[in-house]
Length: 191
Image (tube, rainbow, N blue to C red; front, side, top):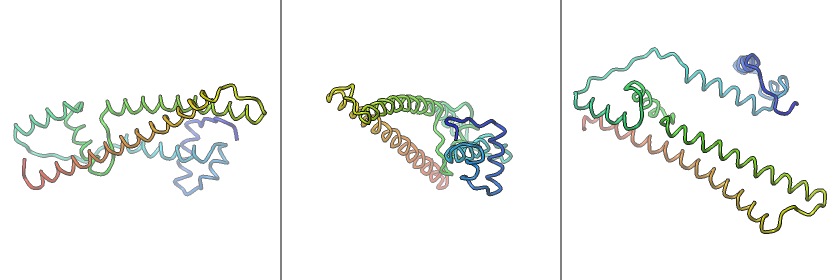
């Protein structure tokens, strides 16, 4: 299997179509010369794309007082929503268990993930060179102190990944609690 093979858009469509018909992932991976993980990713990416670009045909409307509308507009502007419709859509998606972070948080997390991946790749390359030297019976090009620093760096990267995961889970839980409280208040008629 070629290393780092990139699927063409046409191949991606065929994979999605064949998977929908029931083709197994292992067979598709062998057929297109990629890993099973690539097949899973391609299918998931298409599902996400279809969800994100879905045509909206249902409408929801609610009548509120001018004070309620002003308070809502103030709240959505603080969170960076461009329109009432975007804010209501995010609220609806949050009630369905879909985590929809605001644009700023999404950008920050994407940048953090990219930086973490770059650092992780560098540490992996260092570890690979150390293992190659050990297999050849060569003395490590690092002192024991430097080796311990590399191990500590790897631990730090893993800890940062765990912290990012915890941050995302806590954010999702906070959004769910807030949405549930707001919906309960609306249902009970309290302000």
